[in-house]
Length: 261
Image (cartoon, rainbow, N blue to C red; front, side):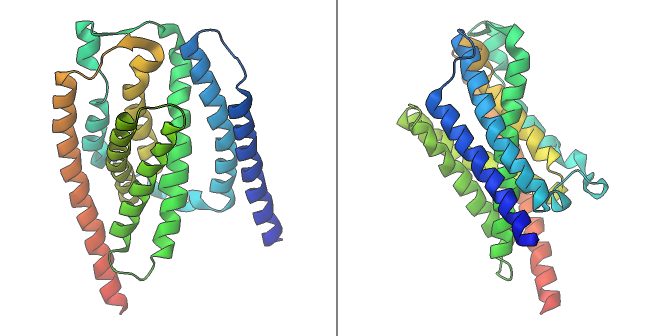
């Protein structure tokens, strides 16, 4: 019975991935406005994959460890430095100064769903399923959590090399690999520190909303000097905050390991 259940879960996941690939190849037209067409197309593809990942998430019990259960609602204050950091990814100064514009505010609801779909797929896949696999694989090894987070973040960063296949520039893609490694680490540490998937989901969605709002809903140059200063300052604060949390997690793990020896 257990094998049959596992087969059904993995089978549905496989079907959802195949269906998403078909949608990528066929490229149905949903709207004549390019920005809206791109968002709807990507949203439907991600929602198709997400259906399989959600079945996997609940079917294999990941929600019991990193879910929304009562015991996981703790330390929301801990997320504040991370929240400030992702909010800095919004092009506030460019929009205020008119360097960038929002031309399609009526599409905001599609944009919100678009950002949420990215966050849900990537957080459940990389921060829950992959990270849990790495932690179990490294069980019994020194600095298990540290190594798992580094590997998880590296794989998450390299995953964005797939954007080259979509026509993205090499330099821009390599930069994306670098910063997604860093924010991926922040999301992973947030998950392990709070034990609540909602926190990295929200952080990820906000980060993507800031990065894509002009591209998806408007036009203009949005990464000005103010943007980079805010990103640098808040990013450094979040990095120190997360590295200290990682040090605490590693210390707790080492102490627990020493007790069990």
